[in-house]
Every structure is written in C-alpha cells, then in structure tokens.
Image (tube, rainbow, N blue to C red):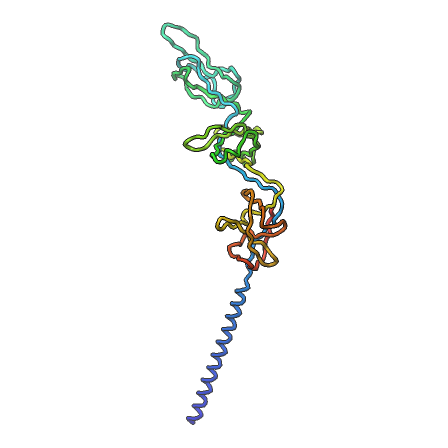
Length: 305
C-alpha cells in the first residue's frame, strides 16, 4: 500500500515538473516574439520633396503711424489765449483761425491777434486752453495731413546695409487690419542712435486707409535678400551639428544621412547648394528617432513651394 502511494506521489511530482517546464518554454517563446515585434516597429515621419523655387530673407521692423505732414503752430505775439475756435479732430483749411490771443499790454489797446493754421489738414492736438499765457516759443496746436500717411520704424544697425530708399515694404497695423498695406521706403537715417543702436526708417504707404491714426503701432516687413529658381527644402528639415548641417534623405523605405551646404536661409525655406538633388525627399518631422539606415514610413508629405 505504501509502495503504491509512493508511486502516485512520484507521478504527481513528475507531472508538475513537466507542466512547469512547458510553462517556462511558452513564456520564453512569447517574450521572444514580443521582443522581435518590438524591434520591427517602424517610425512614422513627415517628408518633403526638394524642389526648385524662390527663397527670401525678410526683416521685421516695429514702428508707429505718422501723418504724412505734421506742422506745429506757434503764435506770433505774446499774451493770453482769449478764445479757442476749433477742437481736436476738426478739419481746417490753410489760414483758418485756431486761437485769438489778447496781447493785453499796459497802455495799449490791441485787437485780438489770430493764430492761423499754416496748412490744410486736421487738428491733431491742441496744447493750450483759454487763459493760458503764450509766446512765439509756445506750441499751441499741431495740424496733420492724413492724406499721405507714413510709418517711422526703427532698424537695428546690423540690418541697415539691407535697407535702401525705393525698397518695397509690407505694413500691418494690427489695430486696423491684419491685411498688409503696401508701402515703400522713402528715407533711411544716416545716423544711428548711440544708446539704442537703431536708426529710423521712413515708409510711405501706397494706399490710403481712413482708419489709420497717428501713433498706432505698425509692423513692417522688408525683403533683405532673395534667390529665384534655386533648389529649396523646408528649413525644419535641417539638423545642425558641430557647425554643419545634415538631413535624412529617403531611400526606398530607409533613410540616409547627407551632409548639405546651404545658401540663403529664409524663415520657412532654405536654399541648398549641394548634398541633395531635385526630386529627393527629406525628413521634416521625426528626425530625432532616426539614424543611418533606419526604416521609415511616410504618413504625410508636406508641400514645399
């Protein structure tokens, strides 16, 4: 009886050992399968085709809207403001009376002296009120001509060599519209401010926009350099390392690392002078996970224009 029980226990032990071995084999097989599957994960990337196109480098300047003509008005005599005959924002003709000054000199009886607008325009600012004392050195009003509006922007000294009178400009005044207003550079200051290291640049607007007001903030875009009909690729395809650029070029379902030489670099596109050929595809998104020979799947090809 005891011998039978011993055989049964031995059989049970052997069966359990067999099951344990089988379980370990199955588990190892599954782990190997997962590892193999993980090793075959192919990253998805975005790519763009190298094409011929135009590249430009732009400059952005900040400035303010100014009237095309702004004239300060001064009285010709000393006295006190007796009457103010206009209000701010009022249109006036050249020669219109803005103020009357009472000279009020002891022993003399003078008629009120008129202060006249020197040009036709709009009363931009009145600087004095009735009862205030004035002299020929006192600014009493500013008349502005809004028919020819301009922008005066500031340029850093490094950009001045790329700015010249006659250069086309695009001006955006956010308070009025996001639509660029065409303009043209009319003057570049020959002097650079010693403190700010900037110089004023004057841009005349080619269109009259009635909503513009002097003092509004403006953003000016100028084209500093331009290359036409050159090989281009998106700027974000570039990877800079040790002072050089390289890109990942699509070769079948893999990528190849190429050193490239660039020419003019714009905000979005860059000129390529060597390293790639027209029609080749370069990776623009997902480069961080790649190395020489990596397999890739392109899930979107962006338009490179």
